[in-house]
Amino acid sequence: QITLKESGPTLVKPTQNLTLTCTFSGFSLSTSRVIVGWIRQPPGKALEWLALIYWDDDKRYNPSLKSRLTITKDTSINQVVLTMTNMDPVDTATYFCAHAMIGTPFDPWGQGTLVTVSS
Amino acid sequence: NFMLTQPHSVSESPGKTVTISCTRSSGSIASNYVQWYQQRPGSAPTTVIYEGNQRPSGVPDRFSGSIDSSSNSASLTISGLKTEDEADYYCQSYDSANLCVFGGGTKLTVL
Image 1 (cartoon, helix red, strand yellow):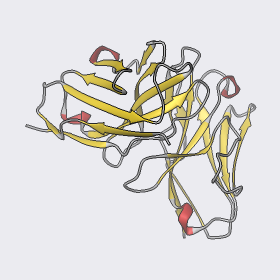
Image 2: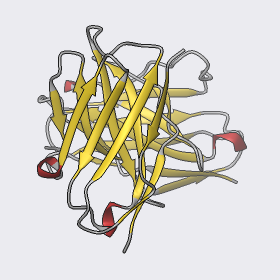
Image 3: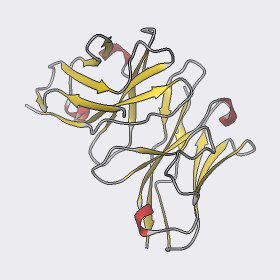
Image 4: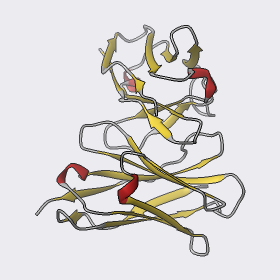
């Protein structure tokens, strides 16, 4: 059974950096074709894809946020870390991580973690 | 990059059929698989359709997906609507550089 769980601060101040960790079980991110993605959802708004990391350490970023995002993995402890710099109140959202494989949907997703950006 | 445009909301009565569209702004809708996710309030999304028309195990066959190249759109059709189908639905696809795109979501009301 695959599970993922997001962790990190619930409140960050404007201009601070955000570091979120996705801890997963039931699969290995060193296995061919495996992907972990980050997606966020502002309150009452739509899903927005942020970043992907592949089993071979290839990475993809949302072009509109690319300059602010870094995604890394530590396969030895089954974690993926997303860093977002220079946080702003508009970045207030629930942040999800999710498992996928090449050509398959994001499934399953973590429960999500709400991050509020406020002074 | 391209956009996926969905209607903001749709509503229909129990037992009826509803179709939600997802129109790709540029490039062919058929060039990359389209996924559909259901999201109930307070929960993470779950897949209801993948690869355009495939249902994961556990998803009832009332859910179906299709592609229409003439309108460059994908569609999610839910037949025999139940109140439990009331949720937000999102389409999702990739571009040729493996950049992911989500549609803006459609709120389905079953009344």
